[in-house]
Amino acid sequence: MPEKFDVIIVGAGPAGSAAANTLAKAGLKVIMFERGEYPGSKNVMGGILYRQQLQEIVPDFLNSAPLERPIVDQRFWMLNEKSAVQAGYKGLEWAEAPYNNFSVFRAKFDQWFAGKAVEQGALLVTETVVTEAIVEDGRVIGVRTDRPDGDVYADIVILADGVNSLIAKKLGFHKELKPTEVALAVMQVINLPTEKIEDRFNLEPNQGATIEIFGEATKGVLGTGFIYTNKESISLGVGTLLSGLMQKKMRPHELLETLKDHPLVRKLIQGGEPKEYLAHLIPEGGYNSMPKLVGHGVMVVGDAAQLVNGIHREGSNLAMASGKLAAETAILAKEVNDFSENMLDSYRVRLLNSFVGQDLKKYREATHTLDHHPEYFKEYIPMLNKAASEMFTIDGVSKWDKQKKILGMVQERGTIKTLREMYRLWKVMK
Amino acid sequence: MEGDEIMADTLKKVNVDDLNYLTRFVSDKESHLVIKDHDVCKTKCPDKVCTVFCPAGVYKWEGDRMFVGFEGCHECGSCRIGCPHDNIEWKYPKGGLGVVFRLA
Image 1 (cartoon, one colour):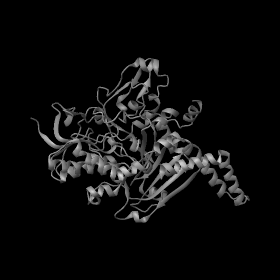
Image 2 (cartoon, chains in turn green, purple; image 1 turned 180 degrees about the horizontal axis):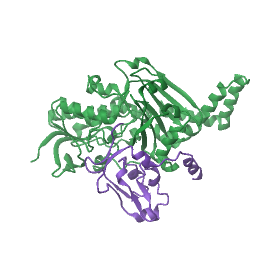
Image 3 (cartoon, rainbow over the protein chains, first blue to last red; image 1 turned 120 degrees about the horizontal axis):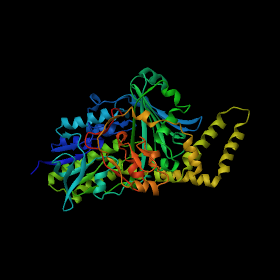
Image 4 (tube, each protein chain N blue to C red; image 1 turned 180 degrees about the vertical axis):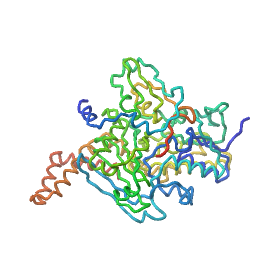
């Protein structure tokens, strides 16, 4: 009989390592499989990591986590061809403990986070692909790997294998993802000297800024561009629904080059040296696309469970929260020696009642609605730019007349139609 | 859709190989991406949209069959999801092989 574990975790990303940390700390016998050379080597994120959920798992993370910059300035651009309507919030309370979020490099961060679980006693096995769950009498009892004699057994398997979620698919927990349910994101890491970054983004040392870019960044297709500051580099990327790229026949890397070349972006990265090019999928289906989360002896967490809040660019924090909840459920299950679906279902219930489920529920129709009604990105953003230009251009026309002109743009579109579209937007965001 | 084509044409051209050389790959000898039936690409798929949206330019149509440059694959999964004919057998490369992201 091969060695048996309490819990097998598939995937050493934020969800898997959150689970591994929690389980190992509680003294359970944990093995975590990672298909990459090291944790993080297959993972990509624009780079913003939220503090709260990490601190709940590693309270003293500030002492050792490889963080780039705490973010103090979050900007939003409604981009047009030669202009942008800008909004944002800069708060220096975020420049000091407890902090809100940080830019990070996943290749470094995921190694560190998995290493923390190993310190607690978890076993990490890299360069190993888990090909399927081993099922016996409707119960998941282990996993098959691509190693010789690679079957491993456990009471519980936690699937943290990322957006493609192939193992849960094989178990029948979900169907193949649709092109409307995933965003394809491409990004580049562009090296720039520290002082250039701090000058260009108006930052003190150890402060960072983020810019989320809507509209022209994705040529009106649903998606966003982003610019995040690291210590000595900029992460610049663009993500759009795969269905949008397919429909518009756009190459994602050309969309990215076009954004880099935009007159409002160009100067921020001028003289920078591209260091890495990366592509990855982001689950965007949200609440409505969540798979079956629990079966006998198995729980699904993180991207594999589609836990991403696209509207607020949150994902790794939802992953960590889900990994922790799944681990806590596993600990209880071990205490009473019950690994039934009924027992593990408390993970699903707690997840849905937590901020993770609540936030995904809040925006459950958002992606779908914005995708079906391209006017928000394609027409309202240029209109907003025109209105701002009109209002702020001093040309001898009175402000009343300018307001009339702007109202005229709305009337041209149809006042009732515009009101209906604004109501629809409010409804999916409220 | 004509308008859409024109919009795609406004994008700045870039050779994806010039981007992919920034990325580290440890290639297998065997492809982890397999076209199930080249005839489907030839006869049923006029758009061959995988040759457009793949962020690594893995797919190239060679007149009668689809060339699969799996060595430069980022393993994102888009082709499996986006193939209109479910004609791509997609699995992960063997453990430790494939793309190795070093930074973000």
